[in-house]
Length: 296
Image (cartoon, rainbow, N blue to C red; front, side, top):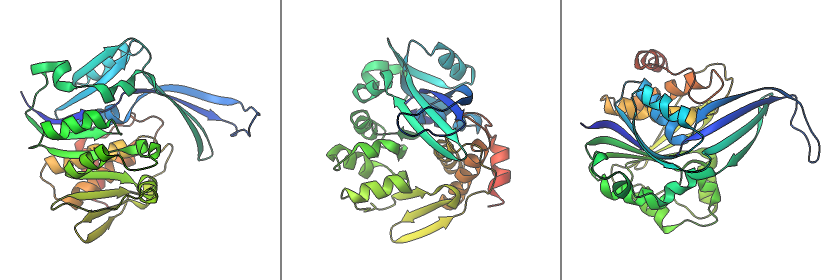
């Protein structure tokens, strides 16, 4: 049986801490409260898209410390293709106060996604009957394999903060970018890529979407740029907004909406996530996302 969306990306455990202040070097601060959440660019997108009504699968790796996460996603109805590896799942640590944030990331086993050959690992269990594939971060060896395997699927790529590792543009990165139908970057990531020599050259029918937080998103098709407003809401925590945007955008496309309406759905989905702590809390249904997108 086929899938609407097959996600290739990371899973992570997010630890959020509200602190009284962000200390200077060699100083300390008090933690006011903390909480553990499920996260990861790939898993976040899969969970939101699943809640929006798509039939979703996730290809990822997971450590021996995250059986509860695996069970949670299975309970949500997500088709899992997970390689279990002895060790710790990626950990994200966010220290926040008054809108400011310092983040730390422990790579854990998730970095081994770059060595994952999905066909070799999962064999015939990995369905090729997929309407859309979504690739998160810069696991370039795996992603090069994905764009070759799923030529007939809608291919959406969001390299995310992995781009900041580059001091030059890798050849494989160009290959994945050029083979993708839709590329999503935030404006910080795009600025960094431009600084190291990347030039936005769109292939025929290729789409670039640049997300800009409270300012919404800019959509580039050929020589055309269209700005799409965000849905205004009270932001508690912006973490996971981009992942929810991707899920909403893809869902809109697969439900037959045009490009710009789908971007509005992405903005609407993101507006729910930022209203609470954590990347997979305050999940919108399709009906809720539609109600908000109609007001954008």
